[in-house]
Length: 320
Image (cartoon, rainbow, N blue to C red; front, side, top):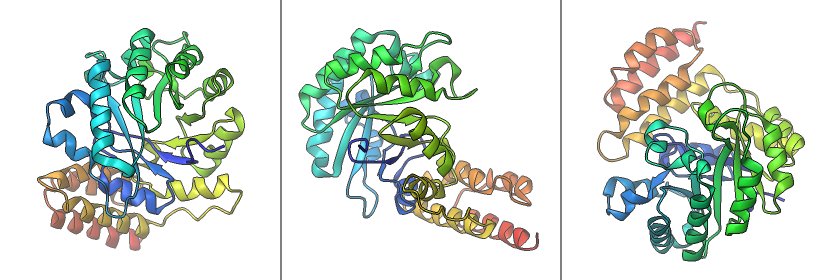
């Protein structure tokens, strides 16, 4: 059974999964994409920058939204506001209990909630009571090394009313180092009756199949492997369907996609095109001439800058 109807999902990533990124990943086969994670407190202050994160990409009929925060009442009220504003374009709401970033956990948000399961339970219960759309929770294997709490934590989320859970197979203190333990996802799947989505170290179609076979998970969520590589969704979709996977993109295709990504970002307000720098770095990684191009990318400030640098790199790769 797919995870709430979706087999392959793009994970919520701050500063990454905006409308441009989601457009490209949906085109390549992502069944569902997340917005960047959204601060419930920011929404409660009617922060335009925070509300801007909820914008839909052109042609995007549905999107999932991930909220972060640690105050049940605020989380519930802002979840209700999102539901009212987005209507049928909202696929479901997810509660962030897995982000390990220091600026998030230091405020008691993200994976810090795994240290306080009672509060985590209260948040899920409050949000579930405030909205009619499905509510899920995303969390990690546990807080610290050698103390896996995810299975019991998942049971608590289910009891609080969660319609599904997503599990990243690393501990919070691991950040993104080491390897994700897919055995943890398997143990969570055995512990609950709601759908389970697996996350962590899915970098190819083969990985997606291996995770599903190893864990029995209902959906596969892809995060960092999609950075500069939206084609990973086409590969995962084909592999999970038992079909032949498309060939990896050529250097020319990677650079063309990077240029299109830059054009999509340029249509955003303000100086959002500057955030293309990191995307461009991901697209050009490993290409001939990438080292020199990276220095130029760090100085790009306009669409024309990116098109020039990427175009020049295209000439270099065509001769290698």
